Length: 237
Image (cartoon, rainbow, N blue to C red; front, side, top):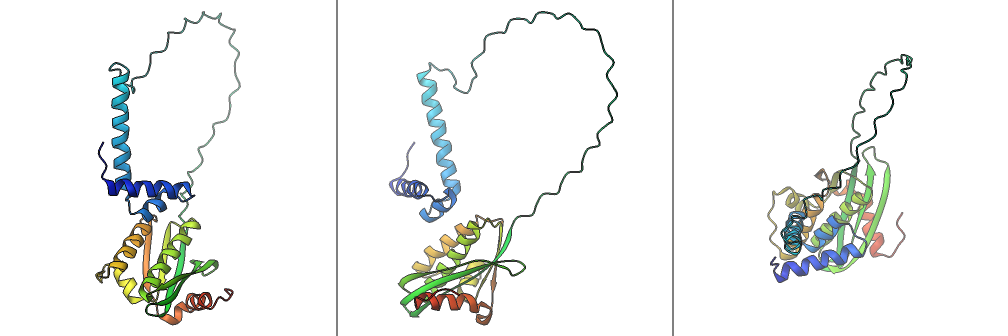
């Protein structure tokens, strides 16, 4: 089986990330390897290993089960006297329970930089669909642009939703550029944003459904305050 050098490097990165505790989908997304590509390589390796096993076993197909020795015939038992068994009431089948709906969460995300580029941070607030807060987190990003910080905020929000076990996510952000690029209405032209956009697309595929909502800045005030608190090295409220 032939694997090009670049793909081998990415696969090695996936294995390192998995060894460090990340799940396979997350590791594959960060290494830039699609799940379909990993599945294809695994199948090719499986076929090659079975082919070698057949050669070493003299052409015997490893899938063919070995015939077990025949069991001796059981001795006929002397029939016992039939005892009339009591009539039991019939059990009515219970109605099948409807499958539980997956966990749906709302994620507020915001990123910002002081200067463009400048010192930047991103933050995310996760709530239930009823508005109850579940988790909030912020992190510094070093020196970068405001748009990069906005994309990093989206990645952080999706990772937190995955951590909480969500299957459906409503992502609320005040960056029109990022929202429209995620919807496919705006093209991604900047090289740095192209890479981040690709990572975001891979993250969204880990959920059953992701909805992107562009909201006014005032409706994202909590996440915005978290970004500023992080840049000021203050405790998150």
